[in-house]
Picture (tube, rainbow, N blue to C red):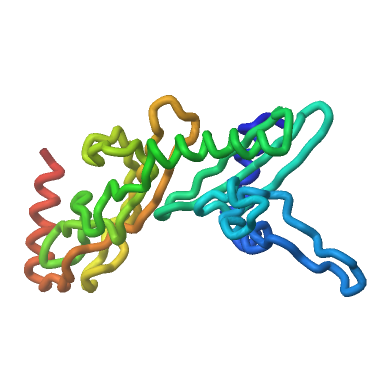
Length: 233
C-alpha cells in the first residue's frame, strides 16, 4: 500500500468509526489480571504523553491516533492523526530508519498542515440560492436559502468569496400552502485545494424563506388562462 492508500483508509475508519480514537488514545491497558505489566501504546506522540517524562518530547497537541508499524521492507511507519480548532489532519510516514524518526517526521508533516491550512466558513447559513416555482400559490415563486453553513479546509488567509467552488442544485416545485422553512431541495458545494487530489464536498438543504398561502380560485383560473395563451406564442 502507498502512503495515500493508508491515509485514505485511516480517513474512512475515522469517519465511519470515530469511536476508534477512544481506543487509540489509551496510553496503557491491563489486558488480563494475571499480566505482570500492562500493554503500552507504542504511539509516543499521543497528546496525553505530555506528562510522561520518557515521551513528553514527542507528545503532540491534539494527537489521538492511530497506528505504528514496522516491517523489514517498509521500515518504521506511522499513520497519525491530530485535531486542532475543529480541523483534523492525517499524516502517513513510511520507510524511516528508527522509531524516533517516524515521529519527528510526522511532526514536520502535521506542523506544515496546521501552519498553512484552517477550517473556514465558506457559505453562511441562510445564503440565497435561487427562486423555486410554486404551484397553486398566491405567488408563482419563492426564494430559498441554505439551511446551514458550509465549512471547508482552506489555505490560511484566503478570502472564502474567492474560492473556486462548484455548485449543483436540485429542487422541485412547491405546492401551496406551506410554511416558511419547508425543504425545497438541496445544493451541493465542491472545492478542491489547488495541487491536492482530495475533493471536499458538502450537501445542505434549501428551504423556503417565507410561507405561502394557496391562491384563490379566481387568481388561479386567471393565471392558467394567461399561461395557456403565453404557451401559444
